[in-house]
Length: 529
Image: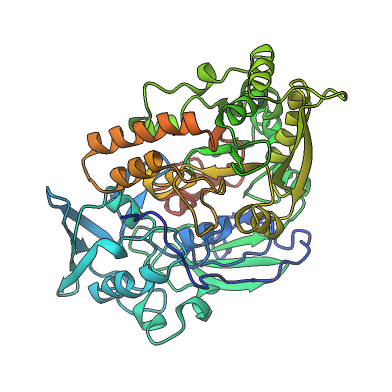
């Protein structure tokens, strides 16, 4: 039984994107009495949502992380620590999970956070959330005792149970009960238990948050956080280097400047490892043979991409999972050794597959899709065009905006190759495995190849069906080995280039690892004198 993918009906919020305006808020971090201490974090576009339970876009996750909280925190290096649950206990058979909740926690509107809220979230919010996975199919019952104890009983084990729960932000029952959850106004003005509270949002200008004066997790020095919308990446970079903003994502080409500037720093502790992967349309006229797909993958010079295109920000991919999830990798897979960028060998493989060069020197032409919102994937596509030409493959560059890109790839299958930037996620079963498992329903952010492989599906299901780490490791190893043979989707580079950078002239503590991914370490920030 597949538990990692499920069809969602209408779980989306659309906010019209508008042109970005110049910085409208001035960062202030003055410890003088009576001053408002402000932290400025520039973003690149209007948020399409602020509640990640219903909108799976980066900005929704980022804003949720400041205002909402899960029962269990997960850091960028996969450490699980108590969140709204101060402790938990999972039975040896993986069928019963008991949470003890924190006492004295309140929602931003002053109402108490209780076990009833938790029960409501698992029964009502989880089944309609935007996540492509859920514990709904294995959740047999929920029992509560008082305001602080919740017991989940499962019909069968679910391997990434704790990791899945760490990704679900708790929503207040008293705000959502009896409403249309997906369209509730609180999705764009969240009421949570987190360190920051929603104040305002002005489309095209900024989002403003205020500190939660009653935050259970400690004192917060920042009074006000302003998120100006700055669409131009170079403008964000200049604002960062001049000290107008405290944090923002700058182009990867600015990484050397960030490292050289004594007042700026690259924040590497904010998110899980990132990856740029190459996907194939296995029903494409020239790509139906796995040997051809392997040859095309080898034609992408992954060391060149890492060293030159991305300026040393990443590592050429050798494995299907990052080093931080090394327990899931197969010792029998080394993508650099199995598919080296050997032009002579690639040419021979294409000849052997029945694709000789024509009079113009080309064997066939492919269309490659990528999002123009990502300068890294655009740069990789441009370099790939020259690399594939060396082996007689023409490459049409088809960059497009996010919505057009998503429809072309996931709905219409209108591509031959696709470059997909992604993160490794909380657990292989919850993220990366979905790019290899069968996706007949053409769900977004999942395998777009149109190919289903029984061996891969069996391995993916086996990894999700047990809480035994050794058994899960064996299953993912089997998945990796088969994925290398089938070659429908494979990582090119493990890449850290889109993590945010910070200017340290006004605030100390920005480099502290937050307890939860995407969260600013609010309780660690202190203003410089």
